[in-house]
Length: 337
Image (tube, rainbow, N blue to C red):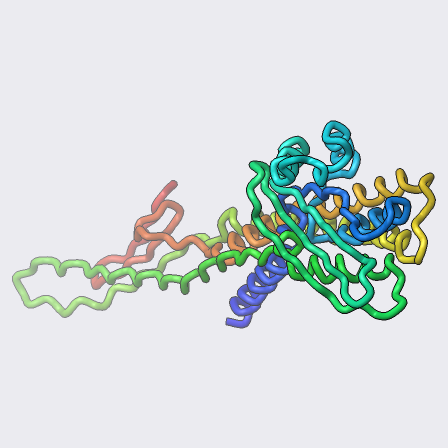
């Protein structure tokens, strides 16, 4: 009974580990989103280039699968540099999503120069040019706050309220059915020998003793296969943890580069893009490894838990022997294979 409960406890622990990794797996596999360069209004053209870069870096989140910026720039070169100048802005944003193989485009407009409040709007358009989501916000502004800080705060508040940047709910995996209790083998019937025919009254027959000698039943193939599968699944979960750690390290280096008040030099932009892409790639591999490892480990646990000794269903199975005794005879019955 103690061994059976310990096996069920291990199965529940593996299922809980699978649920914990599935949330991160879904966040890494979200649909691609093309981020249009932020549109800064209310200021002079010479003052907004730095704010556009700050807005773009502030919009990068782990819960979003963003299209690389070079693909976005390649498309916008054919659209005069921005969809804000197009006659049909939503249609232009839809073409941007389709050209970069994304399912939607995120378009952010912000005015960080108003003295009392900051106006920011987020617009999401799908690949057909149809508006999916729009969120306007008006946020209070601190006196004498630099525009760069205003942009960072406004973009953070906007994305907190938009569905495009929220992580999906984790998928709930069905729990495997608990194996049933083992079936007790049937007790073989006692066979009585008929008494010989005699003219005189025969004595009552003595009870017959049956002795069965059979090989001890063994476990089936499920136990070794199940243990091997749990070991392979555990290795997959460990690999997922290593990849997740390395991906988080690259993401931290990328975020630290923009943590100060000034942007990194243009010579470092290529390395920063490589860091961001490396972090995304490692997170995706970690999610795949975690999902596959958890699935293999749970399958192995189910095989191990459902393995039982095989019980013979026939009384005359090959390799068994019987000792019979009666009032006038004693014999040994052997079933050959």
